[in-house]
Amino acid sequence: MLLTLRNAPLGPTTSISSEIDRMFDSLFAPSCAGAYTSVFPAFNIAEDDKAFFIEAELPGFASPDLDIEVQGDTVTLRGKRAQASEQASLTVHRRERWSGEFERSVTLPSDVDAEAVTATLSQGVLRVTLPKSERARARRVTVAGS
Amino acid sequence: MTCCTVPARRASAGVADAHQTKDIASFRPPVDVAENESSFIITADVPGSTAEQIGIDLDRGVLTLTARVEPRPVDPARPLRREFGVGDWRRVFRVGDSVDASAVTADYTAGVLTIRLPKTQSARARKITVQQA
Image 1 (cartoon, rainbow over the protein chains, first blue to last red):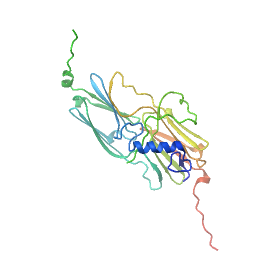
Image 2 (image 1 turned 120 degrees about the vertical axis):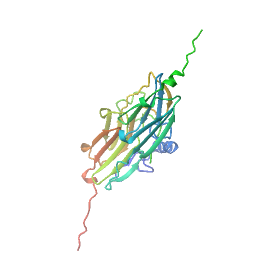
Image 3 (image 1 turned 90 degrees about the horizontal axis):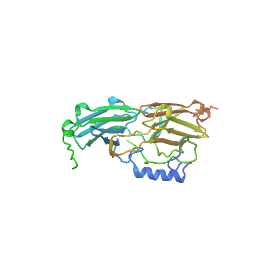
Image 4 (image 1 turned 30 degrees about the horizontal axis):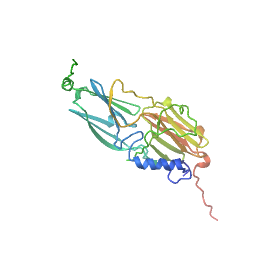
């Protein structure tokens, strides 16, 4: 093998720092780069007065590979990514990228208007905007100070 | 199904990097590495960047890939849950002298970076025919 990776196990270029890298790898695996969780895909969720926002990193996914289902306050995201390099002529040395099918559901603090949900996918980043339902918004009562 | 991680890690020192001085954590992207008769192929998940913000540097047998990612502020929204960090991607590979540096090509589509590193003539496997006496 001519191409040796810096952190290849016990490879000729193994150093103390790469050993530490490997220890970290095994501590946090299986997960995704940049993620603080082992769930795939990781979500960053935010809200303002009108909507919830879910962001997920889904590189290599095309829009038809993704499916978003909303029911009340629960959002389910499904997707599929095929292994790209399945050519017979290729010898694979390392496979760290996630592939296969996933399904993940999250329950939001209140109901959303399923009809008004929108999503964009750009450079592998999915952003879903989920407007809160009228009913959920109406439930908020502001207490006036005296 | 494989995936790996190291959360929020700083760029390692040693190899020059244009924005290393910036106080931004860089993340280690998951990669696939494969080879065929003529090239090595590195595929890296580096979502949220752009082709212009990707750097591929091959210097003395060390390939450094960097992908700049602009911060994605959620303002004026309030964060409810934060499961991943957003920042630059960086990873270093040792490729030795087996790669023809002038012929390296790269493509960035849907957050996936594919780098093709053609082998030098001397690095390609040769078939040797045994002569019969």
